[in-house]
Image 1 (cartoon, rainbow, N blue to C red):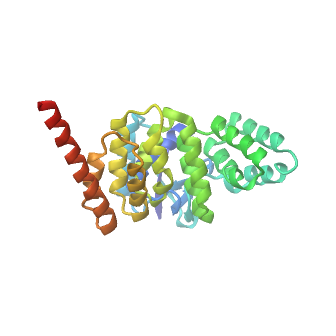
Image 2 (image 1 turned 45 degrees about the vertical axis):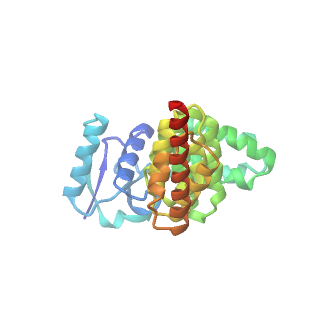
Image 3 (image 1 turned 60 degrees about the horizontal axis):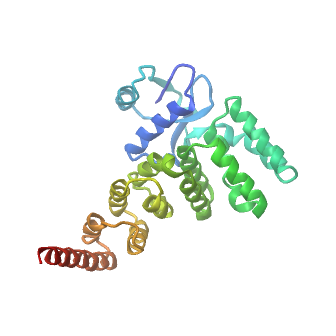
Length: 293
């Protein structure tokens, strides 16, 4: 048998977001994982544990972190377990199919239909998963329409999850780049989602480094800490992106990030970071000497 964690009557978007964040903190890849339809509703794919004890531990932590005592462990049949992304089931059925048929002939009508479905209770993340591919495959004028709808219908967390799911399906980096651009347009409201992504150690972070480093309205101290997290990312391409963005002068004090990168196992990164760290030390000494005179 297998076990999942859910709430009686199913989870709403906000509740599922808390559920997903805790899974990510445990280094669980939400885009490819053991899953089961949500017991009682089958509206979402939920994570599956092989033993009850591990599921109970997760449920207890979730109840404590969310201050919601309704989370429970449910036993599910092994026959219901498959592998794939977590999140709404709607994306796999009628919602996406109806939109794909309607959009070429009537883009505004298709988006209005999607808007109505969200207002009637469909998942915002499901809507984001439907819309995001059209940011790269629709015409330029239609892309503007799609981007406006995404900013209206999806939260920053929805955008990130939708981008990761879409990228997991076809490995088109443009989907991640488009999501990053939309998050930049969202301003400080996108910061919690971006900071969480920076700490997730996902290799896809490379496409969000610029958005994280330069998000308007966010304190430099917070952006610096997120870049420190990214400097620890196991994927070397992420760390190269951090080097490039730092060299562009995104922080007035990049010392803590260079300090991490100076010990990087990639020789090129470590060499650049060591040089930059030395320049920073020289600059500080020069300022001190000038001040003392």
